[in-house]
Image (tube, rainbow, N blue to C red; front, side):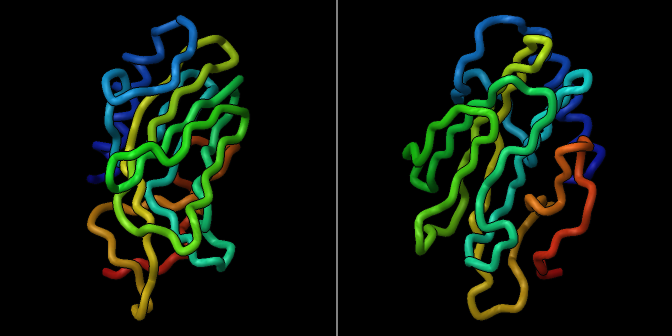
Length: 167
């Protein structure tokens, strides 16, 4: 998905969901739109979640970390490739470290949160747990966004990744 479509998707989601001012509820499949890379923004508040992690112990993108600004609380659910709930957590800085060795594949992440102005932001996206294996690059079909590309001070992808993705 190109950057225009991703940006268009989160603008629409921000406008639709950003209007709700009710009690925050952890996201479910029924109430959160699906995004290729989770990026929601309302005024000065935002939530971003990468769509790729590589838990290989090198210290780069080993854990899933929700990047946000001006959020009071964030709820996160992670479902495994089999659809079973792996993690459900709330707090100011939710993270998830896959088991060792990790189960590779496509996970889903559902995130909701309350901004400092009490607006609710919520969405879901795919999360790919990848490993280099014998290759010198990561196979990924789509536009990878890893945690080292995100800056909690600025909305949207800011940096190149330290991961090597196959062309």
